[in-house]
Length: 332
Ligand SMILES: Nc1ncnc2c1ncn2[C@@H]1O[C@H](COP(=O)(O)OP(=O)(O)O)[C@@H](O)[C@H]1O
Ligand SMILES: [Mg+2]
Image (cartoon, rainbow, N blue to C red; front, side, top):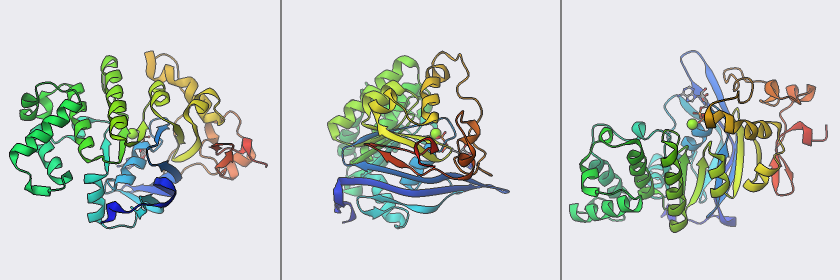
């Protein structure tokens, strides 16, 4: 079966030159502008960048769950040797049920309001189980209890009978993690998993995710504004701006010694942006994707921009064990 296929070099996920557009009635939005990302088996990577830079679009592209207006224009997403951009829907579904799980930014939009937690969890368990629909009520319940216990939810009976709106934000997020875990046998995509939660609960949830991925030996792509957590939980981090990867480095190195002007500004502005709400963040806005800037997409906001930055998109070049896409580091 497809899921038994092994790819070479230990690579679990290899994204190359991925371009994604959204189409509205009047416009095309050219959002992802040639993203490349690599993940080895067991590796944990962070993905950071301001709101609107394309992080959720990238994760949804991997799972094949872009909204109807979104379209992969070109590029490859190779998961265990299978090109997800070219494979059929059945294989994609199989991968979503058994291999890759996603924790969404907003649990309320990911959970179905008209079904109880039990109905939703059972549905996922049926599909992710080897026995498919043959699981009976008793064994489904057992599996659901086990999952709810893993995400430290007490009173599983009460939770199973509840509708999403009857649970607190923290509990909903735990339920969503349980659901993601039911299908994440290999890779977990976590999209700002704590954004809508109280600060005290944020920490607990991130610790929970960290423990579970270690226990289950999952690979991870973590999108978060909590740079402290990115730094604790990931081996490598990608910085994305305006649909382009600006920089990629071992996480500790990136935070200690950022190369790209955007990364520097981002790291400086984060405590102010997402902490106590004082300060301005980075001046300006993410690019207008209908008519994105030529050359480097960051040049309009970059304090170091020169003529070449307006003209030519910088290549992602390697410097030791890291990569950066900036003309300050090319020989022009
Ligand atoms: N359904 C959509 N239709 C049109 N444009 C969209 C849609 N979803 C996202 N976009 C565009 O893609 C950009 C990136 O969005 P997103 O991937 O959600 O960024 P992030 O997760 O980094 O905040 C948005 O600023 C928006 O312009
Ligand atoms: Mg997002």
